[in-house]
Length: 350
Image (tube, rainbow, N blue to C red; front, side, top):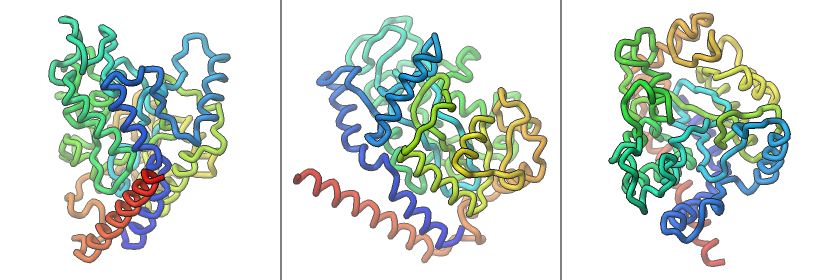
């Protein structure tokens, strides 16, 4: 990656629409933890998306009986995982929704409908004792807020042990973000053909974050998502298009989650061709194995090559990233942080 490409990325990251909301959302999480606001008061939706969000909820209410396509405003959006400088990008439709999410995000246990930071849990609660502590909840919330800032060097945070809140049993092997991503990337103990496992990539959040960046078409949670409902004027979609264009221009290797993601790309005049990305042989099985990506041997070989690169080469074009290059990136990030701090201070004065 060249110095100009990194500079262009920093400029795009400055237009991240979530940056304007984070201070309020952090305060809301604290207020909820302290009991000063109720569950129905939590609304982690971008101000610019609220009209679209409400319109979506009304449309899907007329189309579905069971409500699993409804979006969950009480959960923090999860649009990004990992470092955008990573060589491989995984394009997904939207964050899913499963019963660990209220527990992992806001500390509401679906087993006994109690707050993990306020009440004694039921003896038969399925969540790990460590995972349901107030300390671990705070750690997860810090990681969730950090990913919304989308900064260079971000870890693949869902692999952090703070999100390891369910028992390690076959029943839960694909339930929740922590177990789902471990299964997709590395499979089980006896699994073969998994690209990350084959290439010896470490299973920790930092190692995976240097290799893989995941980004959602829509940042809000639902068990199913009705992609036919258009999100005209969404600030997030505008930002998403900028990021994808940058990824295409810098020759990232794309893994496309589903046909609906392909349609979403096309609707925004974006095309990830056979030379730039891969689709799954089986859309219902999204594990990253050679067999599941067999229709694209050249791209798979390119992905394997990137995975096998040592970490000090994975984010640069040369053998070693120059000191001046790194210093420039640090300077740009520092300036970005100073601008945010100044803006926050001015807003507090008002």
